[in-house]
Amino acid sequence: MAATETFIYGSNPLLDAIAAGKRFDKIIVQKDISGPDVAKLKANALAAGITLQTVPREKIERVIGWQQAKIANHQGVLGFLSLVEYYTLDDALHVAFEKGEDPLLVLLDGITDVHNFGAIARSAECLGAHAIVVHQAGSAQINGEAMKASAGALSKIFVCREKSLVTAIKYLKANGLKVFGTDMQNATPLSEVDFSMPCVLVMGSEGDGISPQVLKFCDERISIPMMGTTESLNVSVSAGIALYEIMRNRKNIN
Image 1 (cartoon, helix red, strand yellow):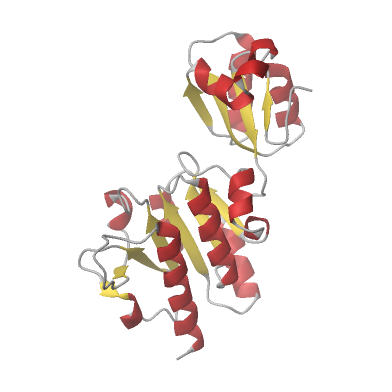
Image 2: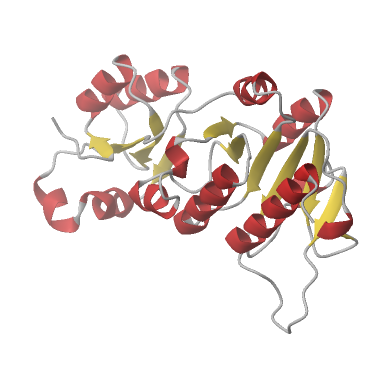
């Protein structure tokens, strides 16, 4: 079978894997190919809720490996197998309430670095978060590097993939969760915030922070006061600090 531990290539192997219920992070399709097999693959992938992305041929060959790609019949299609099971927002809320705890979800807006993603998952699991929420497209891939950076946490914490982060936030707010967005402008210092309610912690990308369309739906902006001259902390470090403060606040740790 045309597969490795983390990806499958070729139209028929991919169609067989989808039919067998294999979980995929995404399937990438070479931008200049077409035909009935590709059309069927796209239709089946979309029906299964799998993200499709069009890429240059070089992208597929780079993933497979240049030497192997010379002999591999990848047919211009490649699917990244998911190393974790994905859950719904309802699943995440249910597990929190089942434990008798106020839900705490970490929503990642634009985090694409797998090491940061893994490190955030590690802090989230260690510090009591019930789930991580990511965008279905454009988020860090949960590959072997992310799993390693999480020290196994990605196998323990719920991961929810949503088509729209704004829709996800609206749904969580409708279910009684307060949304806190980390931001440097017009924000309340972390230590002055009350987290003793069901809540969502939103972390943005290192380069751009939280996107404007997500930020406007945050109920409150929070920040980490700093004393040095460096402009900002690494996003995984910021997430760890914020999650610890939420845990400390909830447990009344001095």
